[in-house]
Length: 131
Image (tube, rainbow, N blue to C red; front, side, top):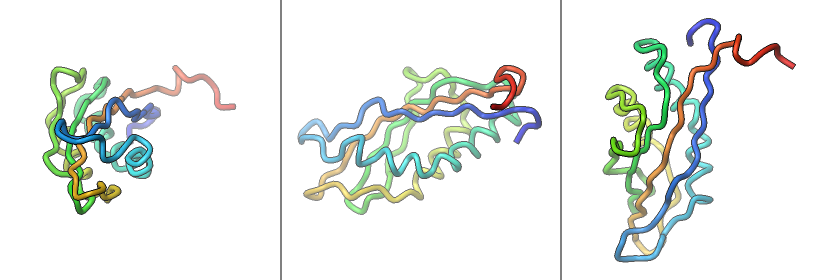
């Protein structure tokens, strides 16, 4: 990690919906715990980005499907909705996401997920003294 820097990171759900032809098969409460349990991995991807480009920050919106085994497939970054679009960050996030185990969608459905990740470096000077 960069010396003297803290990483400010949040991952909030934007939209979690089922395929257009079927009702939602998983909701945000099903998916959020998995994502939150892997934030350290996401942070590692972002820290690598900061090493290359120290002022990188913004929102990266990604979408993927959760298959009937609970695995993420068909990962893609949505450029139009993102304000940070670093190819290595996208690749790293996709690689790690593909290893996560999500809940299995009911009825052999495929869940369609769209999720924003927010990234921002934060220096010690900006945060003030620790309390």
